[in-house]
Structure formats: C-alpha cells, structure tokens
Image (tube, rainbow, N blue to C red):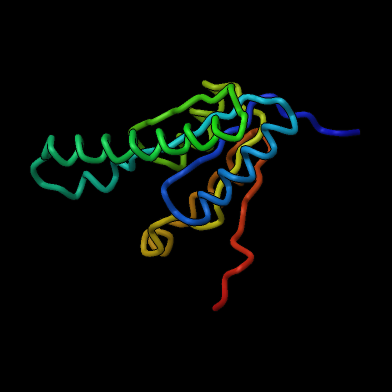
Length: 150
C-alpha cells in the first residue's frame, strides 16, 4: 500500500536544515501531485523580552518573513510546482506548526528540519521538531543534514 499525500506542509525558518526539508517537501509534492504549504512562524516569545514594544521591530520581522517566503515560493514554482500556499503567522512556533496551521490548511504531512536557527533556545525550551512529533495528528518527516560533522 502506497501512501499518497495531498497537502504537504514544510516549516521554514531560514536555517540550512529547514531548507533541506523544503527541498525534500517539493520533491514529495511533485511525486504526489500535492499542494505544498510553506509555513513560517514569527516567534513572538522573543518580542516579549522587549520592554517597550517597538513597531519597527515587528515590521522588520514581517518584511524578512515575506522576503524569505517569496524566495521559497519562487523556488517551488521554478521546478514546476504550481499549487503553493504561503503561511506567515505570529506566535509560538511549536503550537502553530504542530496543530493550528496543519488543521487550518488540512495538511496530511509535515516536514521540519531537525534543528533550527536558535541552538540556545533549544537548550531552554526544547526542540520545535520534538514538540511537533509529540503533538501533531498527521505524519511528520524530520529532515537531518547528513553532511554534518561534529
């Protein structure tokens, strides 16, 4: 029995492993003739440490996210993927990527990089991919960088 996915979500944050997940997600979407949802969450927990909320910080984060997503959208379409959905949300990446976005977008497969941009945050609050693994109600593929050397 072969699993056929109809709506694949890739969580991206600009990291190398998220990019590897994106590439793999595009290939899976092409093979399955599926919709690709590319999701990016602006982590508002980081903004809570700013005593006076600065609208310029928010605007810069939004602009960076829009530029990142436009690049991913173009790359997906350049290789022939036509059904691409871009999602940019504000909030806690863990809960949004594990439950909220997959439910709203009717996702049946989630791809994430094994690690993201912020190694220090992983030490404090744990890995987003681990949280998604424990809480997602659909299949999850965690993509690793096999070229890593320690």
